[in-house]
Image (tube, rainbow, N blue to C red):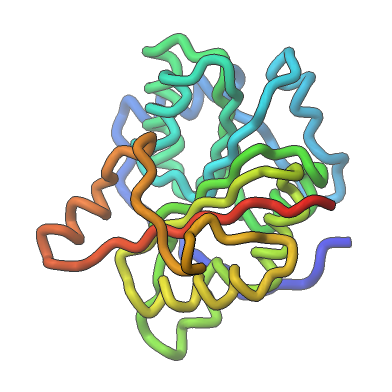
Length: 229
């Protein structure tokens, strides 16, 4: 049963959507978009992608810099992205069409609800959570996506040996991520000292990372493997 979590990790704002993105949301959604509704059955990913293959999920893919590049570079893998902001979804739909991708699907909904009710346990080979909103102010920390409950949900959805990767450019959030993930008994850190890892070669530097570098911020990557069930 989906637990009650009324506090959202995001705020929907009326951001600008280009004409191309709006058209993509209308015309390309049937080809690349997945509808999600609470109370329905978990997604049948084999039927959706038309094959059995390792699946990677990116939560909060933003403008799709990582998700799109990975789907293009790895046609043997299936990619699922979740994002609440329509402009980013529209941009990824355009990228998927232009690249002729068959291995990419997107959901425009709260990732907490989708992961809990829409993804079967053990269905994912990898979960990516790059640069979630750090909610800097102390009174907003309760909105942070990475908390013990959500990490436990991610661990359930990973297959044995599956990998969770996270990144942030806000050190206090990195420290919280580290504490929460290290406390989960189903996850084993891929860091030799149980702290941070180098940025994986497959991940292009996102606009958040480039912005952080310009401002003199650090970037912290974390990686964990799902222990045997």
